[in-house]
Each structure stands twice: as structure tokens, then as C-alpha cells.
Length: 313
Image 1 (cartoon, one colour):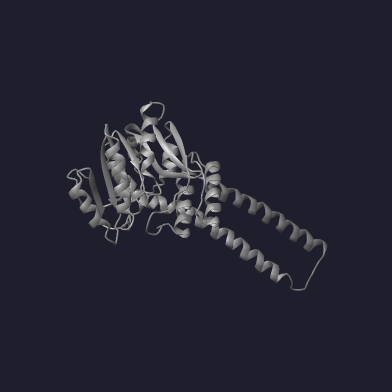
Image 2 (spheres, rainbow, N blue to C red):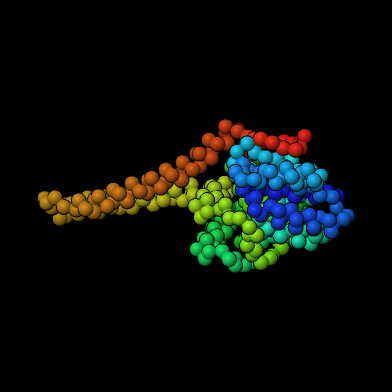
């Protein structure tokens, strides 16, 4: 039985040697299984590609696909799913926050036949900034309420899946990808494996607060039309309020005639408020339109610049 390990890499020169050593140790101990390490170099600007070449030269299990530029982690994961040949397929980060030592336990759960996927989740956020942890928890609460994607709080991309589940993921070929939502949307029987948060072994995180915020917005839009429903409801509400205000002004003008010019400050405030609401609504609608625009162009998810796989897709 073959196990494929998909490892997206972006400027992981410092962490890769530690990861390769750890995963090789685990693979050597699991003698009843064959392994392939599928490294996806996402346009790294350091010596990541050189390291991957050296791994491939000395270890036949190590293969790599190097993108022509940086396409993002989601594209890297999709490339891995499209090219993985294993009966079981895992996604792992190269920074050692996804410990390879969990693989034997994950395999045992899949072998039992009770599950199609063994996914990991952090039950603590030790070492993470408190503000980021707060927004992360709020994100999981909101997206589970407004969408049909079941996303567990603290869920990692690190999971081991059966071939049917991987084929289901590949079949969802949309350009705008949010893998946590895709994993939840396709269903399948999932065993959650909690573990304590582990900090990076080396290097720096590539996920700034602004990137995480943008990623969260993409998740909301990809798996829910609740923002559009909110905009529609807000429009109805503001229309009713405006009608009531107009009726009030009309009745007041009949009952209490006033020839003086007044109320300009409140008028300006109302205009600015309504203008802001309109721009907010247009912005939300614009996000959905931009997603549609990207999908209809049917551009490839990624472009391969170099690989040591003859059958790379």
C-alpha cells in the first residue's frame, strides 16, 4: 500500500531539512507501507528548490513539482491532490507544525475501515498571538452558522485521506479554493485527532494577519451566500426607515411650518451614512462578481516550471 505525502513549500529552506529527517524516520519505521514524498515548491525565492533536488537525487521516494511562480498554498495543495498516486494521501506543512509522528496512528484509524479521513485539530493555541486566536475562533463560529461546510475549530490542513475522498476533492476544480471548506462540504467519515499546538521548527510564518483576514473573507464567499442575503435585508430595512423618515418630515412640515434653513448637519450625516451603506453593499456584491469573473476565465490553477516526475499533471 502506497502513502503519498503532499508537502506545500514556500521559502522553507530552514525547515525542510528537519522535516525530511523526521518524515524519513517515520517512513522507515512503517516498513509495511511504501511512501512517496510529493513536495510542491510554490515559487520559493530561497534555496528550497535546491534542497528538493538534493532530496530527489538521494531518495527515490522524494519527488517535486516546482511552480513557475507563487500561486498560493491552495494551488499547491490542489497540485498535490492531482498528482498523488497513493492509496492513502496526506497533506502536511514543512514547518513541523504537523508532526510526522502522528502518521502511524492516523493510518491505523483508516485501516479499521470506520473512517475515510483522519484530520488533526489543535486543542490549544499556545504560542499564538491572543488577537489572532480570538479572530480565528470567531471565524469558525460564524462560518459554521452561515454555511453548509462543517469546519471544526482549530482544524489543520494536516489529514490523511483515502483515495475516494481525494478523488472527490480533485473533482471540485473551482479556481477559488478554500480547502477547509471543501473538506467539510464533501462529507465522508472523519476522525478528529486533537494535539497540542506546536511552533515552527525554523523560519518565519508566511501568514500575516492581513493574509489570514483575506483568506477568511474568501471562505465566507466561497461557501455561503449569507452576505448577499444580509445586503438584501439591509436594503429593505433602510428603505422602510427612509419611508418613515420621509413621512415624519412631511407631517411635521404641515403641522409646524418652519421657514428657517436648518438641519443641514443632520442631513449631511444621513447622506454620508446612506452612502457608506451603499458602498458596503456594492463591495460585497463586487466580491461575488470578482469570484465569478475568475471562474469563467478557466485559467489553470498553477503552471509547472520544473519537476522530476515524467507524468506530472
